[in-house]
Figure (cartoon, rainbow, N blue to C red):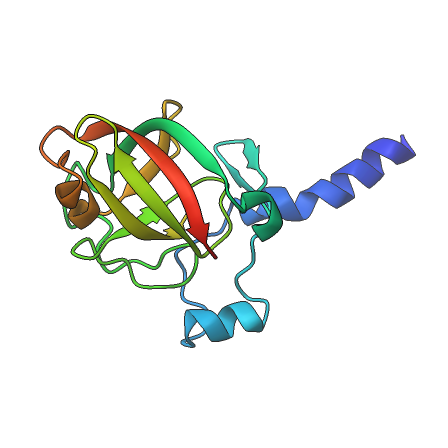
Amino acid sequence: MRKVILALCLLMPIFLSACSSSRRAAGGISPAEAYRLGKIKNNPYVIDGKLYIPMSYEEAYSYEETGMASWYGQETLDQHSGQLTAYGEVFDPSRPSAAHKYLPLPSLVKVTNLDTQASLVVRVNDRGPFVSDRVIDLSADAAKRLGFFERGTAKVRIEVISR
């Protein structure tokens, strides 16, 4: 019984974090200052009952992944515009950026559309996509530059190039 209570006490902060929005302002300070003060961290988080544990920068060094990419706000382009990313920056769909479930925030990654070989360096500053067959969500601008804005998805290769 003690082990169950101890486990619940240790996991409760993770489960409670799912009740809050990752897009909340960090007290009106810059993302860099918020991160320095410990307000934005690469902590484990829960979405729809699933636990996600972000990589450390050391784990992410030279990380590569291949899979399907999509872009934010396909239902309505302005859906995410102006909201804060998980890193605490204002999301702007007209600038190249990305969301990833596990990479540390922020990270720079090279995304290559495997159909066209078009590539682009984007800054990962948000969490997602939380769709099972997707590995990265890109801003509308990034999807346009990579040539899959109209189609909505593309098979891509992701290569971490910098913190």
